[in-house]
Length: 481
Image (cartoon, rainbow, N blue to C red):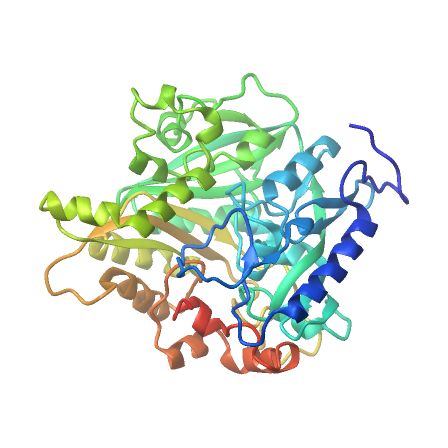
């Protein structure tokens, strides 16, 4: 691909470029202002990683396709300017040839930069690099009021910069983001450590994340899987320039099944950095088994191009629309099932408690485990109890563990609606944790605003969407409007 140099180290080539981006911003701003008053605001996005399936609307969506590209990469300063609708798959493809990657690459290819920032993304580098929004230097945002503002940590829109994460498009939409990048090596070496109970695993996780090393070797990435209450694994990975082999989990082999096989004192496993970043996407963690694609007779026939999380998600969306699975269970005489698709965070010191509750009351396996610690320091003069990212108030200098679980749970007669989801919400609140809002939520309104800092949100809403052009956070994430 032909490339041209623009400024010190800035590479654009045949990417959209800044002039095209500015023209697209002006067009989108006009279209937004021309929407009929009271009409719902929707974005025309080809993919989504949300699991709040809303009723379709006849209102024309905003065309944001012009914001799905890498505008420029500066390999010297290790910065990228990126359209808000750019997927991490597109961004990684642009940065890896420079020996760089985003500081946190969420585990599914079609998560967008804007989605990971206005929602919450996480991955195995989050114990050292925090969450995706913490590597953002500036954001260009179309606000609910119809203005386009550039928000940074310390300009006149710093309140929006810090309040944008976990706002889920209810304050505005990111059109451009400038993010930090970090250097990578060609390969990643993995070691999988087995533990026999949750407390043992959480203690080890706290030590490893504090030291960023284990058994004398550096640790660049950490996550894990609980296959049951007495079978838990932590997967430690480090960059390496050479590898005796590189495993491929896009064909017949399945990554999560390899964890058990490679655990122990052997040589571990090796992946290219590219394949490590997308190791979970091929099988949507383990959720592809629901579609039969892990069956040894089916897997060789399922094309590699269709072994992707966005394909599986479209199948789930079709099932939700047609009610196929529920009807099939009914005619087979099987119990109704409740979808339980959630990610939650609790402090590592409460992680074993959560796992004990989950195995006892829910019983779904496997469970993903991913540690995170905020990267952003508290600003000077911050009041006691004030949070850097107010709408998802995690404590600074505290290690959290994200637990992810995605599947169906059998319902019993006379159980309340969303019984298992509500159990999880209640337990997470009891443990002082938080739940991500990309999926169904069932909180009462007063509890929701207590957990997600209602006063701070109200101030932002009044400043940047004074006419209430966009839904508020509770209406969007709980009432699912």
